[in-house]
Length: 277
Image: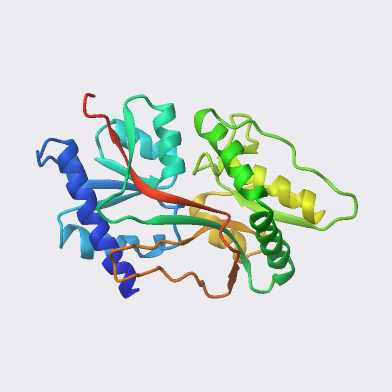
């Protein structure tokens, strides 16, 4: 917790500097507000307290949480926030679909989002299936190829929903999707899940001969869906390292859960209006 407080404090300071630079040094209301998706990282439960303690009190900055990407982009478009703090994959997606915005990778306090999958510790069979396949995909280069091909395509155009493979007699694993973090987690207009995470699940299903059922849940309800058995798996961001914070890394362990190795890492930065907007 101590490491995270330090990290949030320096990130808010960096965000404030970037915002002031984008606004030509003018201190207006929006220049002190920074948006973040509540589903992006595993420390969202602490943000209200910490943004008050290390934001408004220490830097004058305010951290505004959004439950979905559409609401966050709308707030940025209305100048209700100065920037959106997201990883590069999501930032590039936003910039590709909104010509007035640009993604700027964090340079003052470089950090990284590591995507993984989480199960309850009572569901070790599912954890072993997921973790072992992810490790195998890393080892044989399949994961790198999937990232290079599928993720790039999804950034530049909305993903197309595809049916997951089905295997007679195989176990079925229920996976939560929110649609709130494209191009990783995306739900198409027809309500079907798509995006890179679905491409990943397709590869895992084919290798492990398992079935996946996708269950759409709200971002804020992921923990409840997992703990009550509504789903067996949620997608998670397990690391948030800061290279200038005494090598601080937000704790990966979450009590009562098992978290797989990461399947994708993305630098973190800021989506903001272009200077000529």
